[in-house]
Length: 198
Picture 1 (tube, rainbow, N blue to C red):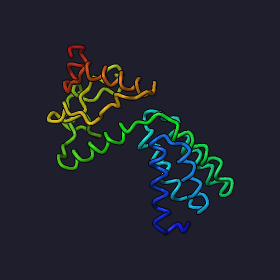
Picture 2: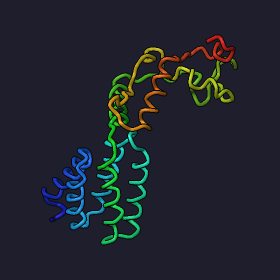
Picture 3: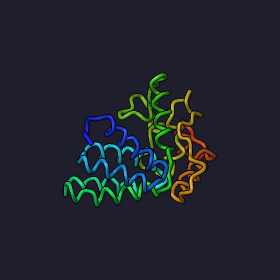
């Protein structure tokens, strides 16, 4: 298979779709085709993107192990590279899937490109003309998750969309924490937060 021919790019696409669809046998087949062509660059890019895009928060450890497997494949080169690559393709294909983080950053990118906003004074690197009681409380970790970080006109905006169908215990824990944070609320009145009034 010529790495510059259409069949090659179709195999790269089929690899990602097979991993996403949890078909480990198909994923191994398309990986093998790319390994025969010895196109480690395409394999690396596709597996990393697939790991972050399609597995994501459902199994962050698998995402990290994918990076490690790719580094190992680079170090040993072909033909031994097939061993760590096969390992990570099996794990990614059999892993639970979540596109929550990928879809959330895409939504945020689209919105921020169309409606840019200024950063609130208390979040600026060097706040100017801000009273001490209104400055960000670096020494108060108990307040950090109560502070409003979005500008006022965006304060109710939700860019993160949890994967409610997730079967991953880790992602379910993240979703429960997100619900708790939403219920708790946030404030831009830092002085009141510091005094325990908010």
